[in-house]
Length: 134
Image (cartoon, rainbow, N blue to C red; front, side, top):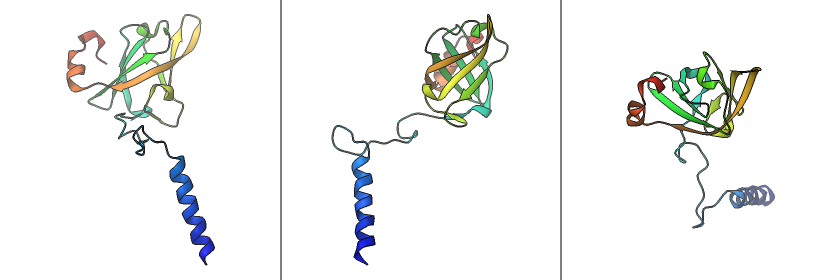
């Protein structure tokens, strides 16, 4: 009877020992909400604008705007009439490595890797030039 309880306690201690720690020895938060990241579902993207070939603004839902920065220039993204946001981690995007942009390019379809994703505040969204708002 003691063996299952001991095994369960050992498993719990092993799992706790493998959890990421901060410098002060506290458990590091790993979920998106506690790290300040705000995720969105790719199916909720309903507009975009690209002021240049390295920056993309996405309208998600009615009020949210996200800024994506590309790893390298994505030629003709700023001229594209349509593009796709492809999630590499399911159907949501929380950080740059989660997403790839598929856009028309000079020689056919191109895939552009996203370096960073962040949700803009209402003030940042209002401050965007009218031509850059998605």
